[in-house]
Amino acid sequence: MNVLLLGSGGREHAMALALAKSPLLGTLFAAPGNPGIASVAKLLPLDPEDHAAVIAACRAEKIDFVVVGPEAPLASGLIDALEAEGIKAFGPTKAAARLEASKGFTKALCAKHNIPTAAYGMFTTAVEARAYVSAQGAPIVVKADGLAAGKGVTVAATVDEAHAAIDRIFGGAFGAAGASVVIEAVLEGEEVSFFALCDGRRAVAFASAQDHKRLGEGDTGPNTGGMGAYSPAPILDAAGEERVMAEIIQPTLDGMAAAGTPFKGVLFAGLMIGPDGPKLIEFNTRFGDPETQVMLPRLQDDFLALLLACAEGRMGAARPRFSNEAALTIVLAAQGYPNAPRKGGIITGLEAAAGEHVIVTHAGTKRVGADLVADGGRVLNVTGLGATIAEARDRAYAAAAKIVWDDAYYRRDIGTRATG
Image 1 (tube, helix red, strand yellow):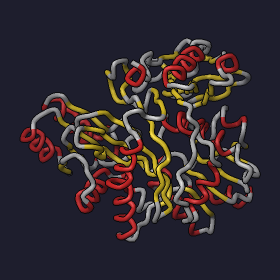
Image 2 (cartoon, rainbow, N blue to C red):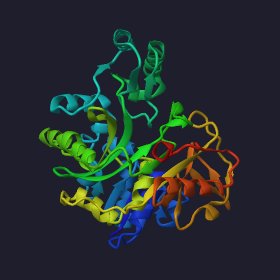
Image 3 (spheres, rainbow, N blue to C red):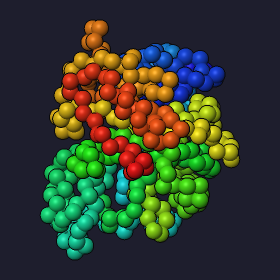
Image 4 (cartoon, rainbow, N blue to C red):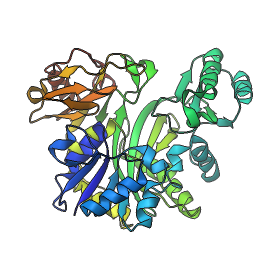
């Protein structure tokens, strides 16, 4: 079958590599893709948020199945548009994608179905939000309600810092995503990313990972889209995963189905593992970045077949199989990220870096003539595989050192929590 993968980042490069292994695959297309994805897919120059252009490409290229990588096309209803044209696709409808597109929607769902999460308030004016923060005190979490590319969250240590975050959101820093604000109590514990595949009725556990959101070492500095990750997450054992499925994932799936908006796709739960067990921080309705880069190299089952089963409402009860290996990804970002990343720097050494236990995926690159250059904030991912997280970490860092790029910045402490 012919498959169209939408997106252009490191997540999509990892997905392309996994899809390319499937015996079900005819031709893999990607839009808009990147130079790394081009090694396994035919690139199409179109915008994933342009529904008409995506549908036209499906007709022209005889696409049988569309896999959506990023969140924005899901929130804008691309799945609905494709299904209306009889084109099969992986991902939730616009109504179901509200689990990511609106933090307030998810909080209300949690309250209705007794899903464990932080206490919260939701506000549409800065005056109300500031008053709530003043009453609650700090530390406290301030979030833009809508999609903000992973940058709309502030964990404020002081009331003044929270007030500044509120003013920034209502001042237009995140556009329409900041029309309302969710303010939450701070959850104590250790964060983990957990993924489940869902077919509208049934959910099966996929994999876990731990992401490093802060720009600086020691988890300091501003939140980013993610500076590194490792999988599996030691903090979440089999018993913990069973609790997550029973207390968070399945009640969410049941609640969405009961509301007439069944969820199909991958449900990505950002969790806090504390003394009382797992609590939901927030949902994403697509694969994570950079978590996908550490999960998919470990997957032993057919990735394309799994996504098809979700889309067709026939997910089996068996959990997908993963190798016993660990994986760790380092994100190589451009100096100045996340505010003003330097673009245009020439990158070499990728062939030397990649190897039997190392995968290099492109997140923000482009070709200028014969040169590969930086064209984003997060530019490359270097993933090491090993018998342990420590071995995977050593291989990833050794490989990253072989990449020549003057503007590269990356954290040197990815995975230290798991390795000591």
